[in-house]
Image (tube, rainbow, N blue to C red; front, side, top):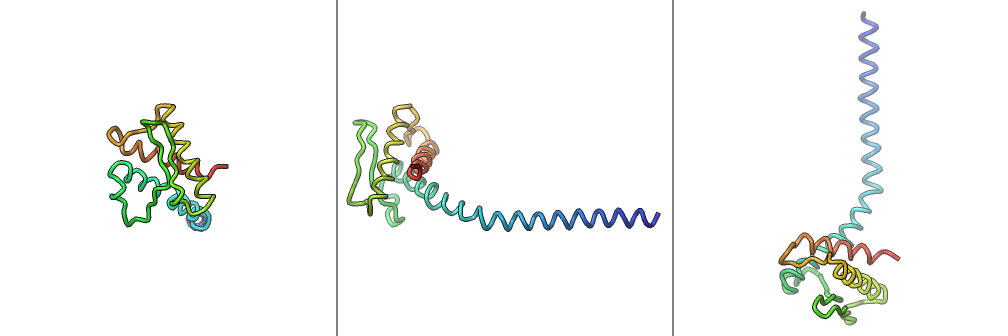
Length: 137
């Protein structure tokens, strides 16, 4: 009877130790590979989308001092894209701005461009989609 209990305890101890090691390994992989991805997504996709939504819904003065710079916009009334070239630091930023605004034009054509009066979260999602498109070839 004592040997059976000892074997069970050893088996349980082995399972607990294995679980701890696997957890540590997963955390190591997550922090070394996923954290940079999280930072990229936050810095380049979600953070700018929030400020774009805030500027659209509350006015450009609502984001003053945040580092947000308006480099272009899509006008739903005229269906025109306006690029503010003075606010584009280089050719890559200019290309990203054009891609971004073309996505808004497509969203409008497909009836998916939200208005702040309808859904602030919808405006945020529109901005997230446009920000992702900026980094696609």
